Length: 98
Image (cartoon, rainbow, N blue to C red; front, side, top):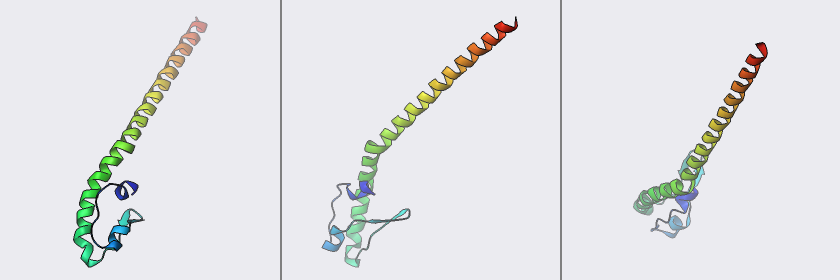
């Protein structure tokens, strides 16, 4: 929601509409809109959503994807080290039996 509120999209209409921010209710954003502000609200939302999505992608999603990739690489490296240790152990156990 913060990205929508701070999207930078301009608001026009009554002071009631301009001064209010949407409220998060469950998975929905809600706003009280007077009849005279319906068109202005629709324009604002059409402008704000793409801007909010761009901000989210650049500020949050990119970082999350980078962190997920780093975690995956760390897990793969740990698994490789574990497998190498198991292989060395198998070789040591095999040489004891001979």
